[in-house]
Image (cartoon, rainbow, N blue to C red; front, side, top):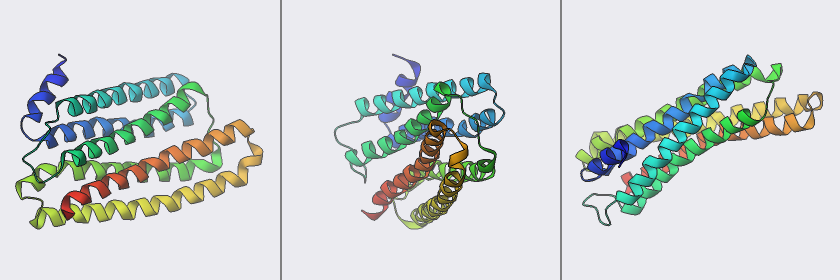
Length: 227
């Protein structure tokens, strides 16, 4: 059995949150490669673009393996204040973020793209906001152990509830950034070849999806606190 699978099996005999946290770290590693991937696209460095895209693919595969091992080793019943199905749903929501990061990488891996100059500033703003909301989502998951220790109540619960509210505010702000980028892309669309324009709309949608998925993760965690 691979080392990562052995370690996960051991963790699952204790708190399953350890495994969820390990998976979220792998997911976040995928997201962390998106800004340098875009930077390589800006510089039209095909070798670096391919390298970052392949790294994202490898990390997504690792995250997928962790998810599968978690599901296979998850006990049928838990002596925890959360349902088994909720934990499975939570790790599934995390995995969607890694899948989206991989989708972004694949577009740049299989199609050479040139970034329109008019979009660079707003793309940078979107990428920075995406990293912030992804980091906040990861931090929420890192608090799961502390939440368990206090029975999902008290100050720790209030702290995580505040973090969830922050993720929701960030998602709303990112929606506004995405709206501005789409509007800007529409104004320059006629200067681009139609296929490139289509792919830029798709790329922007994929990046925006990470914030939607981070908010979804926050909503699932809120279920733990409201039961």
